[in-house]
Image (tube, rainbow, N blue to C red):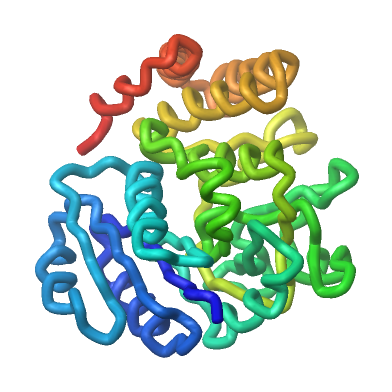
Length: 302
């Protein structure tokens, strides 16, 4: 019997965390739920102190906010120290269907890094995060399109990391834990691409579901609708995205992809939504990433 442990990273979203923990406590296949609190200030740490050690929930509140990347690095390390065979990783705002884990575990013999379809909580017929189908350039937004693309219940080579994704102990031992210095944004993509490079068997199990609140800062149309850009009002998110995306593309895809990303950024903030300040911020962030400086985001942390 494999030991399955959930790792949840939370920050200042106590009601969503409480909802999620209640669902995870109902999931009989879980040996433990490990909650990493990123120094929340909304009462999360006090609530977790009451839960710690009860009904399979264990909690750690970090002394400082080290972002989702740091939280998952700490949580995955904690799970490995506790002899987990499989780790189920998720942010605090996702809500797995009651049978989600069982549907994922049914494919455990054939996969190394796999997860559910992540649907918009407001409209479960839509994906929360658009995905590019394998073998082409088609980006889909509807769950029906993912179901149509599946073969044997799987879309191979595609997964939305850290939203109910399962990872095997063997894979973690090969590739390590997420890059804590990324703080937020792009740490999940980096971990996925690292798993790909290591030859991991990756897939989305379309019959498994996690509901996630949809956001409006992903995939803003640009260039006459021919492509999109991840725009966000948050300076912290944008800085980390510009820096970490540059690093990821340079490391895993090469300079042509880096240059395409820079062209899109310049186009978006000069022609689509004119914000010259964002161009300068993007340049600073990209240069910092290429120098290996992962401290610049701290000026935007509130």
